[in-house]
Image (tube, rainbow, N blue to C red; front, side, top):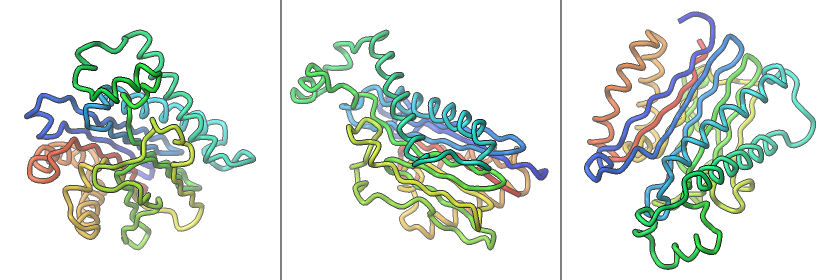
Length: 272
C-alpha cells in the first residue's frame, strides 16, 4: 500500500434471506483519493412494514456519498469548516435528499397490492393516511478520514470501530440506547435529525476505521470479540488491500450462516 488513504466496502446477502427469498436489504459504498477516504453503510429494516427498505438503504448511501463529496470539495477536504452547526447541516441535507428520492420512487413506481397485502390493518391505514415513509426505513453510518480530521455520523444500529495509533480499538461514535434488540432509530423517523450521533476529531486520528450493519455485530457476542475481528481485518488490509477485500468478501457467507444469519455489509478506511 502506498502513502494514500484507502477505503473499501463489501456486501453479502444474509443466509436467512436466501432461505426465505428476501432481497439483500443492506447497501454500502466507498471512495478514496489522495486527500480523503469515505465509507458508507445502510441497513434497511427487515419486517413486512418496511417493504421497500432495500431501496431505502441504497438511496441513503447514494445521497450520503454525494453530500459528503460536495462538502469535502467546498471545505477543501475539511481544512476550512463552515460557520454554524455543520454536522447537523450535513444530516439535514441527507434526510432532505433521501426523502426526495423515496418520494420520487413512490411516484414513479406506486405501491402495489402485493407489497401491501402482508401489512397489518393499522400499517395499511397509516399509508393511506399519508405516512408511508416507513416502507423505505433504513439505518445509516458514514465515516470520513482526511489528512486533518476524522468525521463520523450515524443513525440507527450497527457499530463504528476505529483503531488508534497504538493499535487499540474503540467506538468513537456514541451508542444510542434506543437501539435495542429489534428496535432501532431510522431515517424514516419524523424526528430523524435529532437522532443522529456524530464524532469529529482533529487530534489522535485513527489509523483505521470500520463500519458495519448489525449483521456483523450480532455475529460476535462481545465487543472484545468484535474488536478481534476488526484487528484481523486491519492487518489483512495492511498487507495487501486487494487480496484482503477478496478474502473478506469470500468469508461473509460463512459469517452470516454461522453467525447472525442476517445481511452483512462492511466499509472501512485505512490510513497507512
